[in-house]
Length: 367
Image (cartoon, rainbow, N blue to C red; front, side, top):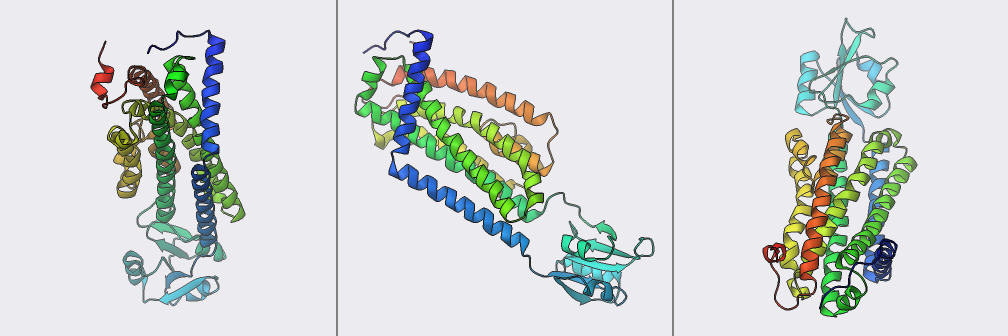
C-alpha cells in the first residue's frame, strides 16, 4: 500500500496538529498516565518542601574554640562548643570532620579572631558573631556538597523519567497503530512524515508541560520554605534545562518513533528501543557516580544525549563560560535536525512493513 501524495502546506500543517491533538488527547484520557504524572508531581513537591524545611532547621553547628574565644562563640545560637588548647588542635578537629569550624585568635584580623573551615564557613556562625571575622578556607568549594548532589540528582532523574515515559509511549503508539492497521487509514489521508511530526509535537507538548509544572513546584517550594538564595542560584540553570530538554526530547522522540516502526508486535519493541533507553539512563548514572568530576561534566555538556543534564548542572556550579551553553545548544539542535531526517526515512520505509522485525540497516538501505 502506498502513501498518499503530500497535500498543500496549510493542509499539511492542519494534519500535523490533528495528529498532535490526537496524541495529547489519548494520553490525557489514559488513567495510568494521569496517575503517574500526579504521583511524580506530588513526590517532587514533597521533596522540595522537605529539603527546604530541613535546610531551614539545621542541627547545631559543632565549633572548636580556645579559652580566649569561647565567650564570643557561646553567644551564637545553634552552636555547640568544643574547647581546645590552641589553633593547631582546632585545625586538626576541622580536618578530621569532628567540628564544622573553629574560632581562634588572630592578631592580623580586624576582629581579633579568625574562622577556620574545611570547604565553606557555617553561615549561622558568621551571622551570629557580632562582626564578620576573616575566613580561612582550607579547601574552598563554590557550592555546598549536599546541595550540589541533590541538584545533580534532580536534573538527572527529571530527564530520565520524562524522556523514558514519553519516549516509550511514542514507540508503543506506533506499534499499536501497526497492529490494528489504523496506520493504513491514517496514511491514506496524509504523508508518513506528517504523521510522524504530529506524534513528536503532541508528545513534546505534554513532556514540556510536565517539565514546566515540575519547575513551578520547585520555585514555589523554595519560596515557601524561605530558600531565596538557593532559588537565585537555580533560576538560570532551570531555564536552560527547559530549553535543552525541549530539543533533547524532540531528538529522542523522533528516534523512539523510528524504533517503534521497525517492529509489528509489542513483544518485540524492547529489542529496538533498548539502545535509546540506555542513552537516557546514562546521564542519570553519570551524575550519580561522576558528578564531582569536572572533566566528565564537561564532556556530558557537549554530548547531545546528555547535554540537557550536563550543561545546566555546570551552569549551576559556575563551571561553564557564558558561550558554552550556546555552543552546546547549537550542537544539540544540529543533531536534532539530523535525527529527525534519519527517523523520517526509517519511519517511511518501515511503518507499513508487517511481520518480521526490520533492522536499522535494512530500513536505512537505499531502495
